Image (cartoon, rainbow, N blue to C red; front, side, top):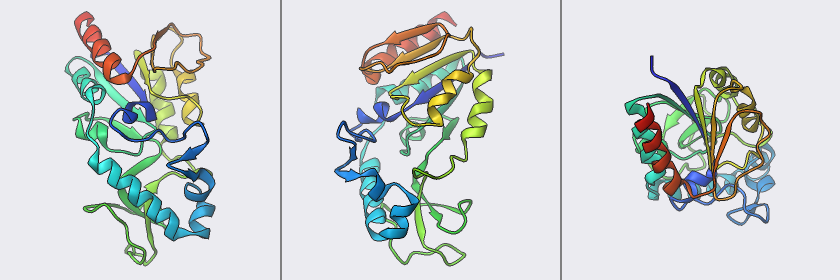
Length: 230
């Protein structure tokens, strides 16, 4: 039986591919207040602005490339069962070749019905137009989880965490719940590696290995070490 590694990734791993971290120090995302572009109320109030905002983010994602950290995680699959649970809405893990990825907050390269969240459509272009409808006749919106919306994949993620033999946390400030609570569900003897240029406060009793470095440098080195010792 292969050991199971669960990798939790946040905005920090994508930042090195040129994608802005979700929330800057001033609380804004690409110059916008979160309440104006990332809530159901914003969509009700000004759908044109919200659609335009995510169309721009999508263009940025499509222009970005996976970095060495993304590619290194794919390499882990040589000797381990690997599950990536990501808070990111980009598809960089997929494009780096990882085969088992759970997106907690949706995927920007998909559109979804604003009437039925289960109706998803893979986009073959960077923009969703106003007036573009799903098969039920409602406006298509970005397939992302906004603040105030349920996180559909969180229950599945919670069931997976106790199965991990090793946990790696990369580029997450652990500020957004419920995703931030996942670490607490790992078995207490399981080692947790934390990779970030600025290590977040981690309140767990597991063996903690902190690597205060950028993901593109630290992840390939950690992956080589884990592969060598397996």
